Image (tube, rainbow, N blue to C red; front, side, top):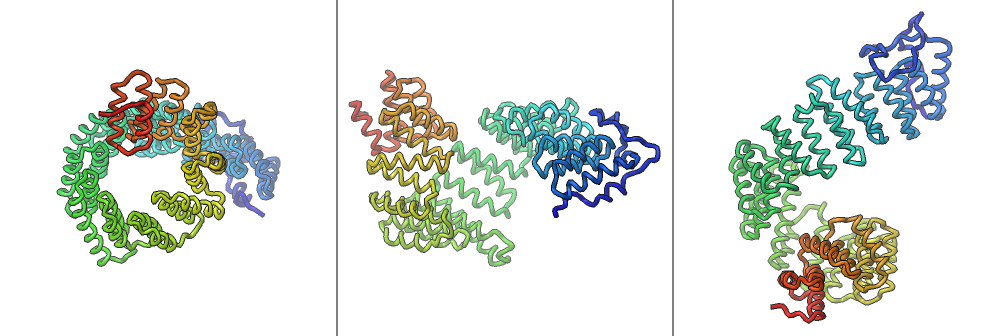
Length: 590
């Protein structure tokens, strides 16, 4: 028989007894009215009635009647003001997932044991998940206000953890905002907590404002400076980059922030500034060999392949020395060297030197990467025209489960498709779909091959199967919706499909392109241009440019259309959609 709670005697025998005391009145929200002293239990006369009720509650718990036990213990706690009984009510309610009663018991437990951190945490967590922001504000405010000075930061972090469980992040921000009183806002931790919650609520300006306030309160705080950079990049990138560089000039040992800055500079293609930052780090920490890889990565992004290779070979040599001098299990040198070899593969691929890329792959001896390496190797062999060898390499991959078997099939199909052998690619996926019928990835890729073959019924049927298997598969909704829009048919259904796709992935440029093309089909040129501009900004792909140019042309903005088409041609002069668009409209690009 299950046991929910400790022995009955633990409650009865350890409770202070008072010969003349009477059972207390139901608990008040005002803790001061309860007349409790921290660390002390209430004096309660153990009458026959109380003993009987405790026995009944205990037996109910022992017999698995947790709802009854929880209610009985809650009533006992209200009558005796004993926090242990409130805790037992809470535990019993949690067993049956009765969050309403669990919250009631947890609040009572926290009121009766104000110094019990477990009670406070339980009450706050349930308030956060039970949709009671008003109660949560009061509980958090009391917890933070009553925390000793040296525990304030910990109380704020606990409050941050609690509000993070609220699904509506705007409500979470409001709760924390109200819970942090005026006296608490002078603490840097309070500002950082507000910054994090504001960011989660998609309020980047507020997040930056609070991070800056935290940094002003503690000018040496790297944590605050990190938030200023991370959150500020969303709204004031140039300003926060400059401010971060100035802050680092005064705090050169802030390694984490320095590396964050390098990453953002690379993303903005400010490679010289990024390299200067890495070199300053290396000068201050010459034994920090991880910076070799960091600098190599920046050089790679900057297009300096020769320098990136030199740094990577130096880095690999360091990792080989570590492996030779240390126990294999005591170092991550193998994984670090593997990362360097993979970056060498990318360099060779950019140079279209497939043999060099294969040699870099062969240098990886990390067993954890064996499957990934063999897949990549097969793709490179196919690029060299060695399709039979590529197929053998994939056979050697020895997939361990359905997921890996699906990946092997998808890779082989991709190899055949790129080689122009669409029928062979289809056969691979037909066989894989028969073997692994619940794989949405296989069905989706097979559907796209059927579309290439003009087999529209099979294409549509498989995409609908994908939607059933994976209701959050945005690409399936997008592909079918775009097909209907492009064919100028079933436009109402196209709208529904694309609406679902963009709901799932609102920033996906391919979906933005499809939505824009749909609006073009229904003659809403302004909406079409808006979506297509967003798509082209995120993905300057020739097909997106062809679409945007056509809508601009048809809306009378011919100069801008020509400029977009030229950009698309520069991206991919052989793009079929661009060529067809220009031919259909009778356009000749200068």
